[in-house]
Length: 484
Image 1 (cartoon, rainbow, N blue to C red):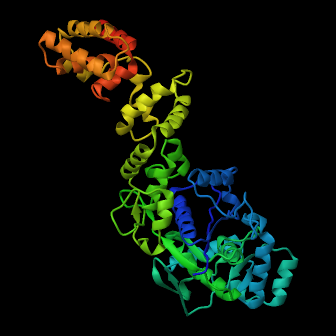
Image 2 (cartoon, rainbow, N blue to C red):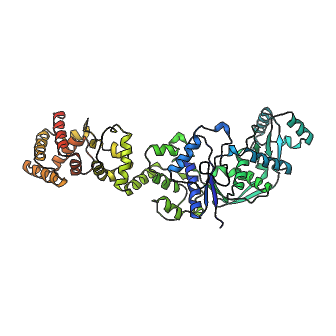
Image 3 (cartoon, rainbow, N blue to C red):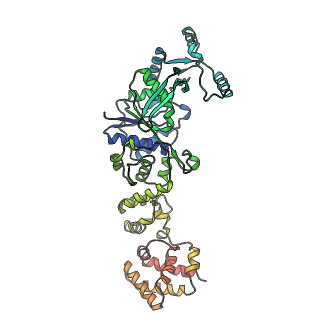
């Protein structure tokens, strides 16, 4: 196989959809696996949908995800420019070539006529609205007169009737369309900008794209693209159309049912490694039960032939699980850097926590969190004394004798000198023995006193991390506040 050249070609409409991330990822994996090139092209010819700053957002989101491109708007390349709005002369030249061959024609129909035509076809209950080729029969003189008079026009593809348009797709296999069901698609709009169809085909050819890997929603456009490749006499690329992403109810993934932007997941604290791992599995697997991958491992394992035809359900529970797993695989020193970033965004930003203190928290909580920010939100008691106490635990564990028992425990802790976890444990065992009670009778109210909660890391880890002075202070506060 020749070295492939593939592209991700988003429209700058505001944010990077997770479906777009998957398309970009599969293109990236295919290119890297086969020593090819991954190209970013911005398809910004629909000026009505253009959002200021969206190009930078797209580039930043791809870079955050670790998908570096070999050619594109901010890195250049020999086939640029890589923004379609900077290639208008190229499209006009190719549209003129199609007109000269009879494969495209000027259309001067007004919006009013097109609206009436559509309404008439709807009345007749035709399967789809199509242009009626009215302007195809205009004489050369008519066309020149209208152009000279500056009557607004579009340029349409001339689809010949009564033949089969067939192509092969790596995922869909053999696909066929009847040309009678293909509309005379607009190629150049009245504002001089090309439509997706013309610009896409011209750019893919001129940029030497070998494989077009994109979402299933573009499958119905391929007949128009095939007609254009054939009209120009160009070799068709190899097509691969990816399955839809679905909500749990199997409807198409949409913002109405949850987050769909990569930026949303980044801002919520998902790790890039986890999001990439999860998105890779939305429609592809290596033929085994493996689910945990790093990006370089995905490159090794990936093939388009293993992409499924059926839609893939976006399961946030699975994403959360992968995020937790990727987090646990990181070293505590890596997590420390991320935790410091989270602290800077939190109410504790003014505090100056030593590395040692935060590393103790990470070690104690690593198996209990799924996100870096949960090293704060799930254990606020490490950063501040409890302001309230879990009511269920108070009712269950705070007995009339508890204050006196905890006071004895507090006195025993005060007698320790720079205690270790084992010192706390030994001291608690000794007090329980003196009071002739089970250790649980002390551990549960003690946890409540120092953390305000009934669950958390190991009791003696908690005491050791907080330190002797803070533990004694919190026990005394709880005794005062929870008097019955």
